Amino acid sequence: MKCRVCGQKAVINMRQHNLSLCKDHYIEWIPEQTERFIEKYEMFTREEKVLVAVSSGKDSLSLWDILQRLGVQADGLYICLGIDDIRPQTDVGLRYSYESQCLTEKFAAERDLKLHIVDVQKEYGANIPEFALKSQRGRGKPCSVCGLVKRHVMNRVARDFGYDVLATGHNLDDETAVLFGNTLTWAGEYLLRQGPVLPGIPGLARKGKPLCRIYEREMLAYALLCGIEYICDECPFSVGSTSIFYKQLLNRLESEHPGAKQFFYLSFLEARKSGLFTGREEIQVELHLCPNCGQPTSAPGLCSFCRMVSQ
Ligand code: Q46
Ligand code: ZN
Ligand code: ZN
Image (cartoon, rainbow, N blue to C red):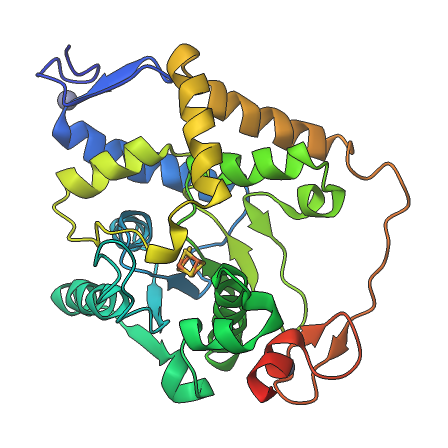
């Protein structure tokens, strides 16, 4: 197996792209691909201020690394969720947030990058497991509460510090797992909103997913080959999630049909572009501003986040 560019020994063979590359050319190829997708989907321009949401996972840290290589001025945001001291069957969750924060801070310090840190417990009086216990949303699993908190904090920091766009490290496997779930239920509203970029509205920054066309396996290889120190443990609450199950199903499909995930995602984007999900009249949701935090919300009064925090 030889590198298609230089003929040296290849370190990765991507059947889905019919491409093998050596380490040096692979480390160049991933940023080139990312740049192509940033431009193709008009995520942001060189002049815009980018905020990257970093969790210390391989995808978000690699994304931050790639943006630096591309010369994009991107600052980081780490949200400390307080997912520590949890004792499931194993003790993986014991210091999940603590370790994530250390790795993210180290990454930023070594590269002299600006990092915003928001500690949910300190700022809002409870951590994610505690919010999950006291909120209706969190019954059983805290992921719904966690998603609400992360969205709120990301939007708040982007607005308060004047960022034009919020970039997240979702890869192709993440996107196809969500797409698969939304397709199983034909969740039209979600299908309409899913895509590489979500336009901003007053009070909410644009959101972009520069890695949305890159396979998880490719991102893992990139992080390893670049020597990026990321957290290997998954969040303890992700155990048994439907998204992991969908990823496993899609991996089986991919192993039989290389390129299947990419084809699924690209065909969806084409179908969406051609108006497949806008057949009926688009419902114009009137947005109100939350009187407490000022973020847009679909119903008058406090937004869901402020309601949860005030409980
Ligand atoms: S961090 Fe939060 Fe995830 Fe953990 S609690 Fe669920 S949503 S699984 S990406
Ligand atoms: Zn090469
Ligand atoms: Zn609010």
